[in-house]
Amino acid sequence: MGKNKIRKWADMEQYPNVIQPPFEDVFRKDHELKGKWNTRFFNNNKPLVLELGCGKGEYTVSMASRFPEKNFIGIDIKGARMWKGARTANEQALANVGFLRTRIELIESFFDKNEVDEIWITFPDPQLKKRRIKKRLTGSRFLNHYSDMLKENGLVHLKTDSRELYDYTMSIIAQNEIKIVDHSTDIYAENRFNENLAIRTHYEQIFLDAGKKITYICFTLNSNKEIIEPPADEE
Image 1 (cartoon, rainbow, N blue to C red):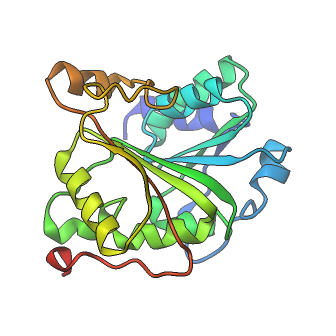
Image 2: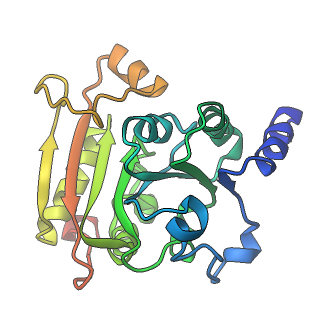
C-alpha cells in the first residue's frame, strides 16, 4: 500500500466531516448514525442528499456550496480519492457536507427508512458485463435499497456518459412503471441547464472533450413495490 494513501487515510481520521467505520462494525449491523444523521451529525433538520460513488467529492462539495439549505453526504469506498473532497469542504468551512467511506452494498446499515430526500449517482462504473449486473447502481438490487431510505416522492438522479447505462436504467424504469421526472440523452445539446446539472467534474470534462454525450435521468421510487429486472436482463 502506498505511503500517500496511508497518509490520506490518517488525515481523514482527524476530519470531523468524515465517517469511516471498519467493515466488521457495519456488516449486517446498524451504524450508530442510522436514522440520526441530521440530529447527531449535521445538528439541523435540513433535507438529506446522498451522492453514491462520489470519487474525489467534487460533485458533493459543489452541491453543498450551491445549496446551503440542504445537507450532503458523499459515499465511496476509496478513501484516498475522497480525501480531496473532505479536505476542500473543511477548507471552505462547509458545515452542510460530510463523507462516508464504505461500500455502497452496505448502505442500509447507515440510513433508516424515509431518512433520505435525494440520491445522486454521477458517472458510475456502468458494469456492462451481464455477470456484473448486480453491481449496477441503478439495478433492482440497489433501487430496492434506495426506495426504503427515500422519503415519499424522494428523487434519484443519474448523470452518466454511458448511453448503455442510460438505456438500461430507462428499461428498468419502464418495466416497473417508475415515475420519470426528467430525462435527456444529451443535456448540453438540449440546454438542460440548472444549478445541479451545470456542475462539471474533472472526469466529466474529459468525457466532453472526447465527444461523449452526457445523459441524465431523474425519477421517484415507491417503497411499497418491489423493483424487478427487465426480462432481457434477468439472470
